[in-house]
Image 1 (cartoon, rainbow, N blue to C red):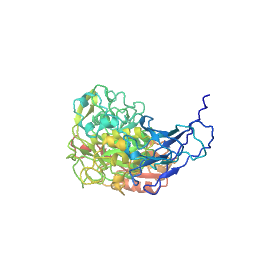
Image 2: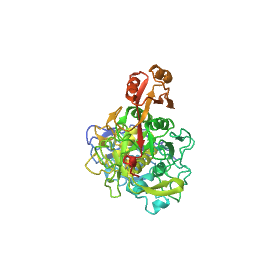
Image 3: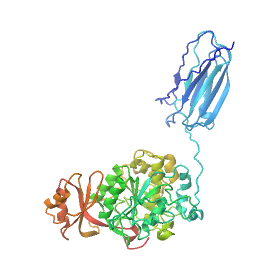
Image 4: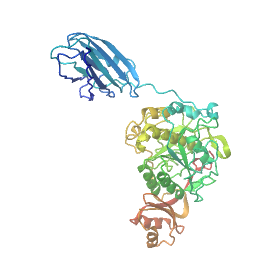
Length: 550
């Protein structure tokens, strides 16, 4: 008669991290004994933890069989994907302790699950303790190698024209993330959404033209189309260029006209709108050479609080002092982006200063142009969508990340250039797309910035920047009766409602007598229902600060 087999006894052991570097944990397994038991088989499930750098690099399992005969031991280890990594099988003599040094097992990942099965060869008699297991506190530092790089078949990439993608290690990054499901808002001159390399990537159902105040954000310049292609052109479609964001989609919001000029009256409502439409990244390859206006900072704060990462060009005037404070790159919670060359030096035109957070390729960048064409442009405008496209890849791989954590993934993994750590020319360094995705955030805030607030340049209201005469832009609290407020302050004009955010915040543009703007702003700022009020500042493409072309 064949004896009835004994069911396996499985116990899940949670392994804690101790205070002593080489401490070991004793986990006794106690089972009732019966004289008529068949050969005993006991399986103990193991769960490995990540390595604590403060502990020893040698982690040991000790198994002691206390039966009357030899025992078979079988160790099986699996990685976190469930793939078998290795097995160990040998004989264990009665009463003999066998030590297994996990640090010596080739290919054993730092995070693992597995089991140790001990089987006695003969019936066990008498009451005895079964097999005590001394498990490792933590596993040694090891992770499986990354997947192989992914090389797209886009023509300009295959011909070697898109040097920036290889410089930031995009093929290695694309093996980890393609930006699926992430929306990038491009606040620019619009986008040619009929371009063959963009037509399937642009959200024409929710685009908007803040210059002409209609729902058609077609590009009438070229700049916005070029920026959009760098960020997220259709990729691996055997034509044109590859976009770093690969499968990310584009929301074009036209905030500058055919001359590459606009104002904060277009930029501010566009930021609110992009956040309300679900954009995770906002690209602003534009700016004005003065402190961050207070109402613009409020718009940035609104988007940031809704999980949006904002990036902006650092400027193209090759200067530190005169145009140090380029908004919106100098606004708090905006990454200011400098431009680098193919040899990892700062581009000759790239501005530098406290508003620079990070750098990216920005010279001779191939991308899409209006009318279905392609061409090269240079500028911090071109560097900025590299960062935006990478942010889309990070959000897709780590969907629960906050903007601060995405900033950490980008900044703390960047290739350090210039002075060690943060510096005014490169910020935290030139982005490394692969490391940003492989290593992820190094903290809940960019470590490389230390106590600095990222991209925190000067702040101000009513500064000396170029303004639209006779206009002010006002943000009003949710629920406030703005028209009554303006009339109560003695303003003849009731203004134009530019946007009402989903939170209820209202953005208005008011016409006021030329020369009385500051007096009107003083009254507005004193009103309890006004969040912020400032002049209507002019914005331009970075290359147009000195009327040069990108």
